[in-house]
Amino acid sequence: MLWLSIVAFLVAVLTAGAIVRWARNHAAVYENGLPQRFHRGDVPRIGGLAILAGITTSWTLGFVQTQYWGDPGSLGLDGWVWRWLLVMMPAVVGGVAEDMTQRLSVRYRLALTITTGALAVVWLGLTVRHAAIPSVDALLAVAPWLGAAIALLAIAGLPHAFNIIDGYNGLAGMVALIVCMALLHVSMQVGDRALAVLLICTAAATAGFLVWNYPRGMIFSGDGGAYLWGLVIAFASLSLVQRHAVVSPWFPMLLLIYPVWETLFSIYRKLARGVSPGVADALHFHQLIYRRIVREVFHDDEARRMLMRNNRTSPYLWAFTLFTVVPAVLFWNNTPVLIAFCLLFVVSYVTAYLAIVRFKVPKLFRGPRR
Image (tube, rainbow, N blue to C red):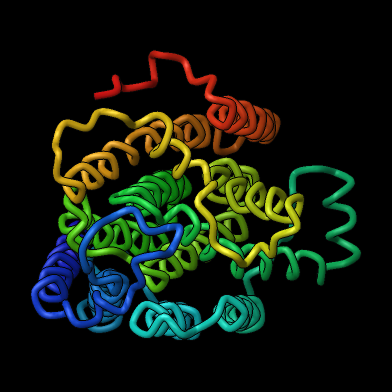
């Protein structure tokens, strides 16, 4: 397992380095005036290709070890690994196409993630069979199509949730790495080595990408990378709960509550303002932190000043993520506690968001103005 993660890391870091060196022409495609742009200069947005290269190479070698090398580590990677990769391709390829051309609309990208979700439900058999709530479980028992619909919604939505939080150097990548490691821990607790292998390879490939992404932001994951993180994590979360009844279905919910709630809250506030949820804006939680909390700027050069503020934004959100990941890992089989922490996060998020909007941020969290 360890050697596969090393392969994933090396392939990702070398591929990302090659993209940084030779993909400058594609970097210029990204427009300067977009509200979600918080950097200066032309930066390649096809880092998802590096992550995909690391994942594909390591998963393939894991499959070869299982099938042809005697599988000394009992990895258990059968043909379903290839099915995972094939099912992810419509959404991931669509995301990369958008990164390279900036011409694929939100509607088409959503259609591609829905296609991937439908394939995952039909071909991979991913579904939600229980919610650890008696009334809901009874409904799922008599209407199994409802569980399939929930799985489809999760698979189609999570890639876009990661894309929403992918706004600053190291933010979405580190969140994905932390979530993968948490899922890896629980997978090992229940003895699911095959799932653990896929997760550790995904985490390692993400780490290879982060070498170039944080702190200097020399490459971005783009839609392709965000979609890839969302799909692997969605597949792994559904598979873990589906294969092992001891794992609470609220474990992945709490684990992913930050990107999920960020998405739901963004849809709500846009609809409340009469704006389409597909229209990009600069009012996401991480963007408000960038503007109203991160203030330590010492250089006169605008590009360097923006880069410094960009880098200082992500750690705030990493800490925010750990507030949900730590209890999720500690109480992965305790549904009442997990539900309570989900509710606590929602209340904390809304409270913090309103405080930042109203400029009521405690001095403890603010840097000095210069």
